[in-house]
Length: 509
Ligand code: FAD
Ligand code: NAP
Image 1 (cartoon, rainbow, N blue to C red):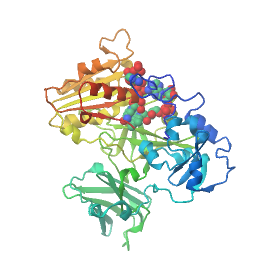
Image 2: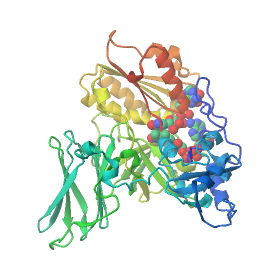
Image 3: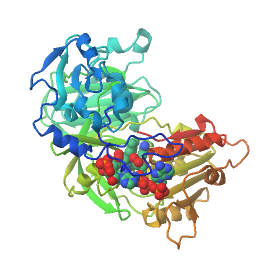
Image 4: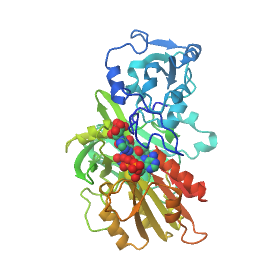
């Protein structure tokens, strides 16, 4: 549905939009880019037809507005007149019409809950639903409504104690294999937010602390017993009468999907060239944040562009491949590295490119459903990447070569337009020389005549040449990432070649 950020991406003429065998993307008419939409919303034009009034909308009234030329949609209790937005919707009018005249919250959350519709559609706001809509607001459900009786036993609990100088909050997660990837802590001013990922649920401790604390926050995890300690240093060594005032979502266990995205401001500490159009951005997390982005997951960056919040996903990489000859410039865990291609007409990447060292940008909690255990149980790992689709492969490669002992062979098949577009080429070649399990194959779609390597686009014949089990019955995992049609075609070719759904993992939004 309201897939705001990617509407002009890729260009209308690009292969990414309509590809044989791939899903057809909907080309937007000229003058219907995200920037054009932002301009229209700032023009002062009455986009709701209500001359600035906000009304209470009944379900019957909402249902009446179910046509392209008169379309209202409810998201989280607020009703928007999306008629003027129709032509700007990157997913196309038909996608938007699926929710016409109804509560589109679930549909919206399924497709891209990270899109900031409040900001994008603020000029289209008609009013609130008169009767509470079926879908409940994010992060607002009390615990008892979220869980059944049996699930309640699995709800983490917390306790706290203090010394003269420290406050320790102990969270009993009731989960055996706790690790740093599953604990996200932020402390901004006096507001503490500690999130624990428990399977596909999220447990939150969220308080306005009784007294101020120092900036640095320590997190200790007793992995085997599932105990997490958040240690705060008091600013003043006085006795606390209480831990603090619970905030709205405090002590709740919700489905991860129902928890709103949380952002913290990170400082840009370096910006280095990777290729002619791609840069490695190093963002430093605040001292008061504890966050690791797990392998295969992405974060969202948020910027205000022309007064509107715009959000885009990016997949953190490592500062370099596991060649162990360089020291990281930022100590482990304190920085997030993003490898980002700057598009000459890109709305978000142009704004990113203009950030100066020392500037701040909002970074969300990680998301994604890739499971590292899939790699650990495989014998052959194939990574099919196109362009910046290489980004999720970086941590994966590192994990595979350093921690997955069952793996016999790891092969990266990397599709690019030209030699100049290949990301980290020399590092990949060095890694292949150093680790005999690793092999890299570059395939170019628009090579110069000097290129002696492989040439072409993703196809059944290329895949049958490069993706082969090392033994007849070896356990295989094939990960694929790139422009959507590339990924969709690749998955189809792999299935045609006899690989099962369980053997393929496609990185998508
Ligand atoms: P837009 O304003 O949306 O549009 C781009 C304009 O740039 C188009 O009109 C066209 O002229 C041009 N353009 C865009 N793409 C192409 C193309 N492929 N070929 C030719 N021209 C093009 N990107 C990264 O760089 N690094 C990442 O780590 C990364 N991770 C992602 C993770 C996920 C889960 C997803 C879904 C996407 C990821 N992306 C990543 C893509 C990223 O989210 C943005 O879509 C991208 O940065 C473009 O944003 P933009 O606003 O600059 O471009
Ligand atoms: P690019 O340079 O435009 O293309 C890389 C290679 O893919 C080129 O060889 C290109 O061939 C080929 N290709 C492009 N479109 C194709 C299509 N429709 N069918 C078959 N092959 C195609 O790529 P990019 O600009 O870096 O874009 C990377 C993409 O990866 C973006 O769409 C980004 O959103 C996505 N991405 C997704 C994730 C995720 O986790 N989901 C993470 C990172 C990036 P041509 O010569 O034919 O163009």
